[in-house]
Length: 247
Image (cartoon, rainbow, N blue to C red; front, side):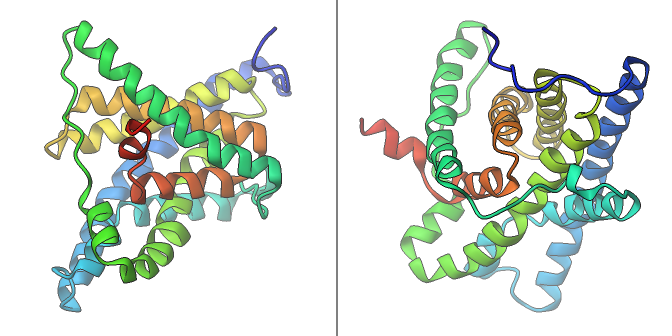
């Protein structure tokens, strides 16, 4: 029995390559705009004299500003926005997905920690992010995190990669294809940013690709961006790897 039984393509097969190409192009536009978002975010921090503050650090890099610009610009041009933006107050079933996803992401990370070294690929040492450390050292910063990461950054990233990218190819591919396209775009985006940072591009592509598969599938099953956005923000602010390692 397939794990993707719920939906099949509804449009002509001949239109599929164009849909996939345009979805990936939207992701590329997001990558480019993301660099602009980082620059604009850092510039605004400097202009207002807050760039070195802990509150500004907790807000992240600003890359999601670019994602939001691309997503909103695309949605402005389309008519069937419900195809791309599916969001509601989480149901009990949705809450189950929100609770289960961290465990799935942790299990995936643990598996990669075994498989990748066996293939001769390095796995970066896990370190608690500065954001997590600041939130636990200064709980008052959670107000900033809730406003910046939970209400803006994570929803913007999910809107582009789950909402727009998956919505673009949904009429042309089955669930497995939709999830694969969005996970590929999501993974390559993180790989590009890893090249410009100190991270491992290969590990970033593989690990975020795996995460993209889980989030993409969760979105297709729940049809609720609130599920993936909330879980995405949780992964930035809660040290699940440390919590699960206790058990």
